[in-house]
Amino acid sequence: MNNTQTIAASQEKILELANQLAKEFSKTAAKRDREGGTPLHERNLLRKSGLLALPIPKEYGGYGASWPIVFKVVNIIAKADSSLAHLLGYHYLTVCSTFLFGSIERYKTFYKETAAHQLFWGNAFNPRDSGLKAVRENGRLMLSGSKSFCSGATDSDRLLVSAQEEGSGEVLLCVLPTHRAGIVTEDNWDGFGQRQTDSGSVKFEDVIVYEEEILRKAAEEQKVFPTVRTHLAQLMLTHLLYGIAQGALEESKVYVKAHTKPWISSDVEAAEQDPYIIQQYGEMSLNLHACSALIEKAVAEFDHAWKKEDALTKQQRGESGVAIALAKTFTVKTALHITSTIFDGMGWEREPRLISINLIDTGATPGQLAYTILLLISCVT
Image 1 (cartoon, rainbow, N blue to C red):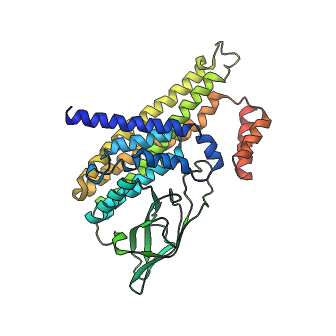
Image 2 (image 1 turned 120 degrees about the vertical axis):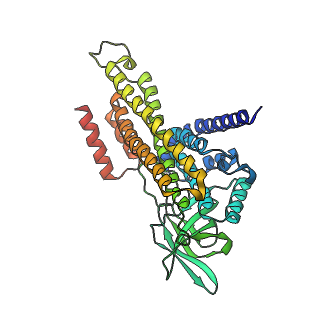
């Protein structure tokens, strides 16, 4: 078997594993999303799978998978469970940030220990959130304050953290064990959907940071390459949204075939034969195909930019950014369109009593309930 065949076989194995996990996650995804909380069992399945080391080079114990394969795995999981895809995507984003911002010694260490122990990384980054301060006291660096929108922080093993140094205002980047004394993850993310992304806030109370945990100060170097972290984040979210749209469309097809009745005057025996429904699903599928083409181009541009590393120019970075923006913009619109339009094809054939119970079970606010009820009334009158 030559090298190309070996890589293809390895990629096939990775995608097969991702599909197996997605199938397992799909069994409880809806129930878990209603209940919220941390998907501890499912996160442990990801740990056991070895996929947490997917983008880490083989010389450091990982799979050494290319970015197209990494994104494909996130997409596969997203079709079944968008919360877990979000957690996995942000894990890849944070662990690979050490390559963007850290020295060779730093990212080698983090890569090796992540691959060896299947460490799950969480986010306490968000440099625009200035609520966390870094202060030097008696020769030690201490963190105090909080960070918001910390996806994956709960049940993580490592946190990528950004803080503002008191006095200079410079941004400090570091990696900390999540369970270090003084770090408290809080379940205070009030989400409407995607309730298992562990995206609450993290508090830091006099948390010690050691020198070997510091990646660098954001202002120390003005190279182009580290700025592609934004590109990586947006591509992760694009594949997440694309997977949500794909999963929703496939689930709705199953529902239409099993439960939806054809329009009384359509003169067909099954809803799937209804010309109106066929037209709707054809248009939605067409948009998904367009998403796929735009995403494929964006991934290729990003992969090219990533391989340039410190030789990356502003022009190349910009071209990659435009491709990603095009893909994400169209995918966002498509995902929003599909996840609302599928109900037209599926129909609204539920008893009002059952509808009210389901709404209460979602944990929605009174305002959200009122809006949803008005939407349902408008659809049946």
